[in-house]
Image (cartoon, rainbow, N blue to C red):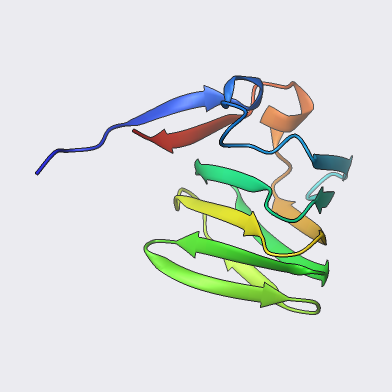
Length: 121
């Protein structure tokens, strides 16, 4: 049985076949939280990654399939998904999707463009 390793990648370094280019994010930073608007076209994949911030994803429209700690969670319009800090997770858009992600505290890595993601290989 082969072991997999995890490597850190900056968002810009994630291979195109793993991250569909039809993905957009905009965010507003407050003192205590960051609120991001995420738009994903159907089939868009966000590779396995983790971060040190708690994340709450609120699906406004469409549908996402999250893989969190080996569990599959389907989230549709109106659903909330809580992802604790340091927990590896990924997401796939099952439909064109708009979601609001809230991070507490704000993600400095998005602000200074050094965000890192984990990819199993």
